[in-house]
Length: 541
Image (tube, one colour):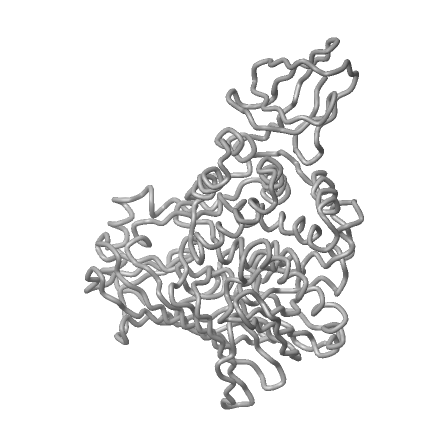
């Protein structure tokens, strides 16, 4: 509830900073002056869903530290309609000076001294937005399993975590010390979340509370409950950093699928990715894979799985090469996000190629691990048909706008070309492992990753990243053959574009074209030129 003073106060502040407060996309996507002065250190969340009413109630106890002077001690908390705030307490004292404005709450606070730590508890309830087509259309998922038992979860990467709980809903914010998520459900159901189960407590009226704890920083869209008739297989693997718990939670009538499908796929996947990327980033929180009422998502230490226990992408090979039907796409792709997306998180969604490009390339690396480098190459070449080149991979910053969906497979082609240019798989593997070690549990910009790759690879990649991330043009290698001469240049590209590529003319050669014609003498006269298929470039005679 808000008194007249706060309404007038917020109107005054809004008038002064109209560009910030009234612009919806900026409030969604930028670290505004109402967000940037406080840092979340811990979330303590409690939620109780009502399946029949499709409603939830609960609270989030937000521990935060003041990291810079604020603008009039005004704070923005995000909570999307139609959810409503019941009350707010600051350091156990009821707070009255706040107002809900659309999908956020604006608070007026006192005593926000630099470096001080506070606890803000927000109680809320309502009927959250229902996910129409999860995970792509986000919201709360209310379904029934094939035996008509309640089956619930959330998918919220695009929509934001504030679609189901109050938080600082921006991708650059992760609670430094982790999260506790308590889920209250009927005794007949099981509730699962990120991290490890710390308490299962019987409470009144035939309900049980499951409390899960995450010890690492975690992005809010990754904090996810699953509720249903689950059974557990508790297992482990011997990983690079010791014993890694690998838990399998499936609907009770799918228990046999763990041994026949999930466990072998997960074990191979973790082993492969530890080889290429370094140790799994969340050993203390374990790895778990949970059967979900939608296709899949990368929820940290809590992978959502809904691929029907089939190989491929719901039984399809996205590459058309045949290799994509030899492994489970959701296990591989969503597990790959533990390194890229969860361990390394892009500061702005405009740079989500850092998540999706590297993770899509993890599909190539898994194919390589299992079936050899040529198989990985063929898979990588096969998925090119999904690239649209409709708009640049990088979106607009500070307004929560992603770029093209090409961040997946065009991003993967970029990384594959970097591998070819390095031309040494051990050096390339070291690069991937160094990225994960250097930016361990960190928020990064896409530009930081670009500069790191350029420095560590020793390659001049400025024009390469500009071309593939920020334009839709795919370079042409234009060439002419005249007797024993081969002339070549790049076209359909930015002015200074130049990278080394491998071709076969009179023999296999490395050349470094620019946008200016160059000529080399051949050892013999030839009529055809071919380009190494691992380069996402077209040939133009």
